[in-house]
Length: 182
Image (tube, rainbow, N blue to C red; front, side, top):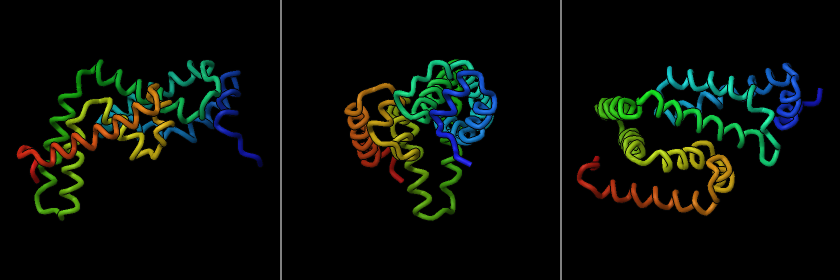
């Protein structure tokens, strides 16, 4: 059996093919949830809500998919935007960051240096702006190229490169700062 490409399935689903739509959801639901959870600092309940919202939006928005980029690039954009909308609507950003900081602080006890370094990095990343965090996530966690991340975020590739430079600069400053010493 020949497997349909995501783009092909998207066009079929947009034309009303419910089996194609079901196949797209089956292929990408885990990715939708994972990206939502990362943008939402691991808030699993809210990420599940966002994932469901994305699935509903996907059904309505497939007719807008033109195939100019890969389906997954287009999908990332919807997921990230929906997650940001959820952050704004629910005013949970500060609560999530507080909970995350408390979790990281608790995880510092009796852990190896590598785990401490990882916890410090996540704590430091939580201090970055939404724009910088989403850029880091797409480039480092999802392993998108700067060009692909730019398409998802609807910004030029050079802006992605600048943001990554800015992240490195801010992390170095945090590491040097007494407030963020390990």
